[in-house]
Image (cartoon, rainbow, N blue to C red; front, side, top):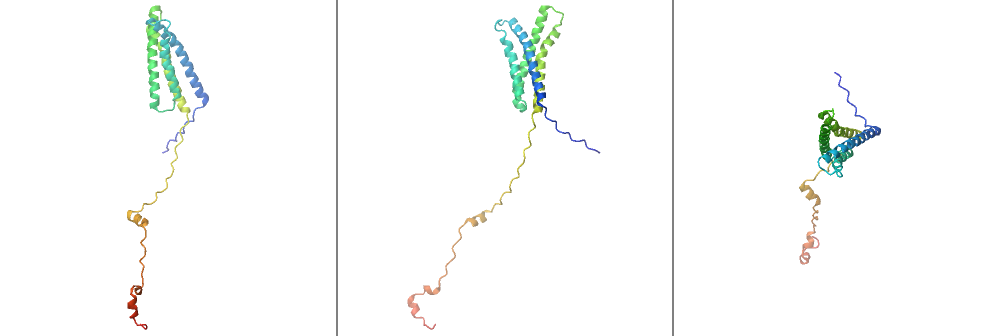
Amino acid sequence: MTLPAARKPAAPLSRPIIAVGIASTVLIAVGAFVLSFASLTDLAARSGIDVNLAWIWPIIVDGLIVAATVAIVALAGHDRKTLAYPWALLGLGAVVSTAANAVHAIVSVNQANGGVPPVVSAIMAAMPPVVLLAITHLTVLLVQKAAPAPAPKKKTAKAPAAPRKSAPAAIEAHAPSAPAPEFTSVFTEVPSAARDLIPANA
């Protein structure tokens, strides 16, 4: 029985491929912003916002999408916890922009009495934000694949620890040695008067 061959790690993507992916994201983002800007500006004016200030509404909504897209691409390669907030902002902006564009398309078609059904018009208007969300995720995947894999950490061998001495042995090693007892001759302790009584030939 032959075992399947191990898969070789995929080579990192080249810089030109990453550059094309990012340039495509920027191009689609610009197109989606222009289309959405016109629709949201008109919708804001129809909703009662002053005509001279209606352009601020798409800046707020689509500006959130642009800022979140830049943050996601810049933070590509980080952990999910770091990318959770930019992705949440991008999703929120895309949902608001998609809904607003769809509402504007339905209102515009009904007032114009055109031959396009309102559902088709809403889908057409909602496509740019959805495509922007999808292309952003694709660009993040490209940037992550282009990043080199982290080198494995080398394990350093630890030197063996010196054997510990037991408490009595350690005390004996550090205790000062007692001086050796001095032995003196017994004759040095005999009084001089007693020495005279001892015979000289003894």
